[in-house]
Length: 207
Image (cartoon, rainbow, N blue to C red; front, side):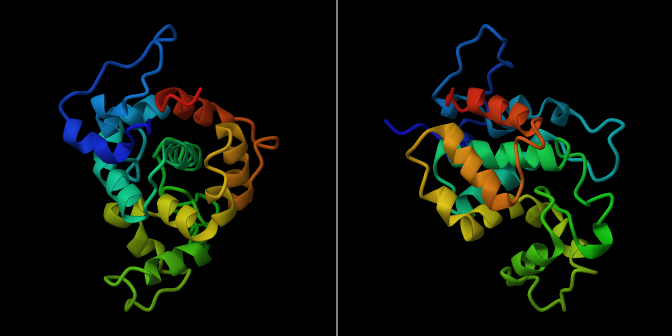
């Protein structure tokens, strides 16, 4: 039976469960949890933005935008949603940053910290932004708005990662490695990426 995905969690927004303990068996029926709790279980620091700067967003703030983006870009399987959220958690430091601290001038940023050229391509795909004369120098002024910021992870996966998309029926870990290859990163070089992936697998009942 197909697992319930984040797309169904809005209907259960009032039915959030408590954070699971290490002894809790991961649920495979995520419709009983609300999206903000799912996100917070993957990236615990997203419970609050206290002391985390002005770019920070909490799980509660980000949840509706992430759910909409999953729907808009047809991210319909649990493994894909889990992987995208794990990537967002790592790249944005649990949603603390929307601009790359070292490369913002070149347009690198948003919730998945994608490169400026991708942000320009993403922004040009949105009718409300495509007429703004977008360049890598100004694109972050537009795409870091919450309603666009949380769409970049699903957009990138849906438009760039066709090989990973073809591997969703295999093992979750093999799929994740294919996804990381698409992104251009390595879990061997950056093993802490697997911490968020392990969190996401537990939340989505994939491990």
